[in-house]
Image 1 (cartoon, rainbow, N blue to C red):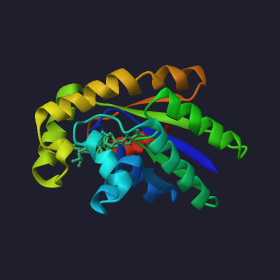
Image 2 (cartoon, protein in one colour):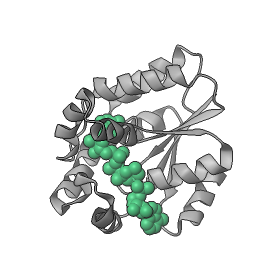
Image 3 (cartoon, rainbow, N blue to C red):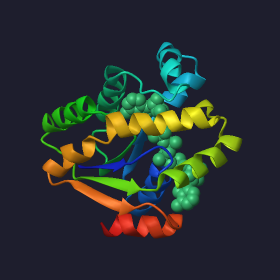
Image 4 (tube, rainbow, N blue to C red):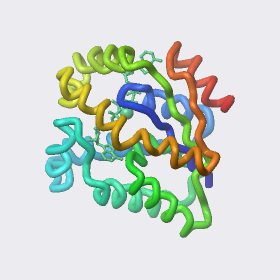
Length: 186
Ligand code: AP5
Ligand code: MG
């Protein structure tokens, strides 16, 4: 089974491009952000706990998201491939994913990082905030905090995957179709 990671800061287009890739290669798309939003909308214990972090633009604790992915992998053992969106986001999560896959004799094929300038991220997320209902899109301070958290805690994964020879930087600006084509070629 193939495992690929779509990577990059909030608003870089991970979710949008995952949809494009699913249509192209019939892999499954898993977004920890989406899984957490489902939990929040159901007012589950996990959702209520996660909401405290998400609404401020902070990361949910590692063990919570690692547990969600572990469960997801057990439930989806026979698909051709999985596209991870928004996971892993810390070194601890990346190590846990490597271990989970190694126990199945599988590994990550590549980390595809969508590179988008800061001002374009702000523009996209502010625009989406008008209609998305996502509290973490609703004010500029929370959007900026998500980007800072990405730079501090998530960006170090670029070195982690570069050392494994699995890092691919992709220009994340232009039309959705142009970016999809770059990803598919890579
Ligand atoms: P998550 O849901 O992953 O949000 P995010 O990383 O902040 O990213 P977004 O979903 O906002 O952006 P995206 O890159 O998917 O871009 P999109 O395609 O939507 O996480 C939310 C929260 O959950 C986190 O802050 C954290 O609290 C928690 N969480 C999740 N995973 C976690 C983990 N592993 N560990 C700990 N906590 C975790 O595009 C954005 C907008 O731009 C859209 O409106 C789109 O239409 C538009 N757009 C896309 N492409 C283009 C283009 N080419 N041109 C113009 N506009 C475009
Ligand atoms: Mg997303």
